[in-house]
Structures are given as structure tokens and as C-alpha cells.
Length: 96
Image (cartoon, rainbow, N blue to C red; front, top):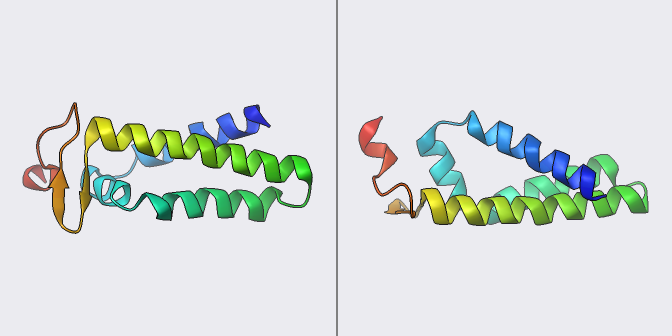
């Protein structure tokens, strides 16, 4: 279960690494959307068994940790307002 959750976490990391910085900051401003997509798609794909459901839940935990770290380190956009992170202090909309 943990290995499936970790694989889904790596997939989420690779998927979001391809997203433009402004769009990623906007997505990080709405973390519940990401959690619903990750857990919902995991349950839809693997929810037929107890192991699959647990893998989807573990992937949701990993995605929650990923989103929390990204929000703190890189910042996010919520309601049109830039909230800076620890490592990225500038608004990515200014450099597009």
C-alpha cells in the first residue's frame, strides 16, 4: 500500500513539475481540489478492493504532504493574492 501511494506521489510530482509556475501557484492556492482529484481518481481506479482503497488513501496522504511542502516552500496564489513561500519570494505572474 505504501509503495502504491509512493508511486502515485511520484506521478503527481512529475505531473505538476510540467505545469507552468503561475498555474501551479493557483492550484496550490486550492489544495482541496488536488486532494479530491488524487483520492477520487485513486478510489475510482483501485477502489474495488481493500488494498486498492488503502493505496488511494495513502496516496492522498502523500499528496497532502506534497501540497503542504510546496505551499510553504514555493508560495501560492489564493484569491488573486500572492502568498510568498520560504524559497520563492517573487510573484510568478510578474515574470511571465
